Image 1 (cartoon, rainbow, N blue to C red):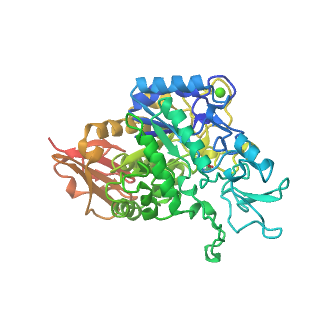
Image 2: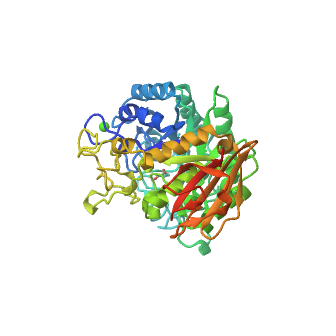
Image 3: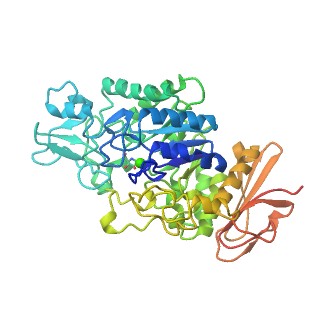
Amino acid sequence: MVYQVYPRSFLDTNGDGIGDLPGIEQRLDHLSWLGIDTVWISPFYRSPMADFGYDVSDYCDVDPLFGTLADADRLITAAHQRGIRVLIDWVPNHTSDRHPWFIESRSSRSSPKRDWYHWRDGRGSAPPNNWRSVFGGPAWTLDDATGQWFLHLFLAEQPDLNWSNPEVVDAMHQVLRFWLDRGIDGFRIDVVHCIGKDPVFADQPAALGEIDRVGIQNESVTHELIRGFRRLVDGYPGERTTVGEVNLGDLSSIGSFYGHGDELHLVFNFLPLYAPWTRAAWQDMIERVEREFPPGAWPTWVLSNHDVRRVRTRLGSEHAARAAAVISTTQRGTPFVYQGDELALEDAVVPERRRVDPGGRDGCRAPIPWEPDRSHGWPSAPWLPWPPHADTRNAASQRANPRSMLHLYRDLLAARRASPALRRGMVRLLDAPGDVLAYERVSGEDRRLVLVNFGEQAAHVPLAEHWQVEVASASQPDAGSLPPHAAALLRPSA
Ligand code: NOJ
Ligand code: CA
């Protein structure tokens, strides 16, 4: 399982209200105890923080807010000592507008780095084409100094790099090497499907309406660039990994980013972020992942991240969030858990005056409460308000309570580690009555059965005869009797 750390909100150690790298190191034992294999840390590079670190002004340094390169080295070593692998975020599509490359590029039309970004003449006083940015408005901003427009699929503070320029490819490959040489185990690659651009920058067809460019940007040249990353990463000893964020709508396009085993090792499957809590929707997702991903592609399952409302908030109850945890950790593929989902956190309610994110995503980025007392283990008030019920939904209280979400996750991960069927077996959907989703995982002699009741009523499932409960999201009278919105992992009866 991969555990996502959003460093600003994990734990502060120096009292500035912002989580930092020493804070992650301090709580590595929480992650070991939970039983995770890998952490992915959202960006901690130098950044003006217009998009909270996804606007990088130096890829080879740590922002002083988060610590120093020495802190990063210590964190990597401390994680490795506990058998935890470390993935860092890499943001290849765009830099900050304060990155020295962009400052140089915008300085004049004849700058040697002019072509490192996408500069175009406007159409009269209008932008070069009709592309929209994710955060609203045109994806182009006019730079008065040189009278040309630059492309930014996100904020104007995040100009897009021009990956058709081999110097950009070289410079960014050096960034990968810089971190691989420091011992990191791989990268989560931000909006990787966006890096290749249409060389003629054609208008988006009117039929697509005002849809932003990131949801449809898919050029074949991107795959060639990704094969380059893969060759570089595979050239390093040990098991190094790449996980790509591909925000395209259909699964087969997303699946194409695995290539023929020569592109990304893993690609995010975001379907669960948008699925309603029904048997039909979740069964359909499992079937589609099996059907539409290329053979040999290892899926992923994402329930939350720093860009969307938390699973507990979306599904509307802790019961459903617990059942969803059973599903995601018993699928074929790697589960991704966003920090705080293991505590069943809800999004914080952030009053207007404290909102800071240009994308309205503050609620899911609330700080992690570690202790029950009012400071929740933080040395001073954090940058965002606490999530609801932090007096019970905190790491210490839940560690003391064997029925907590935290223990449920721990039990699920332990069960997964112990079972070849859960780790890598095939998945087979089974017939079950009404609102019950049932599937089996099988590897050789090893078998597990998972039952999920999406309904409001308790359900009885005859097929659970000869099985016993290994881990359940809610207490149930016997293997085949599921309370409403509950899930159980079953093993064959002894
Ligand atoms: C996806 C990241 O997850 C999100 O937080 C960010 O705003 C955009 N990419 C731009 O980097
Ligand atoms: Ca701090």
